[in-house]
Image (tube, rainbow, N blue to C red; front, top):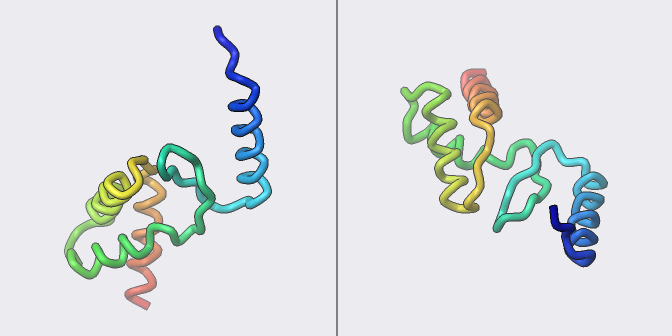
Length: 95
């Protein structure tokens, strides 16, 4: 197995240290790189879909938001987390 170039190894090590120091609740992928994100990062997409499709179940709302994330950033994300956030937002709407 070939070793990564030193410069590349240093880049990834520095990035990992930065992510650890930020200690954010989420990591997202933008342009192929990991970034820190707040827990409510997906909420704008989820809220928009909840407003547009009020009769949809949590899975379908979450799936729509995951597709929007993929189209915007080219990454993927856990459908389970998005379903959790959808349920949180649904509960907020009913309180």
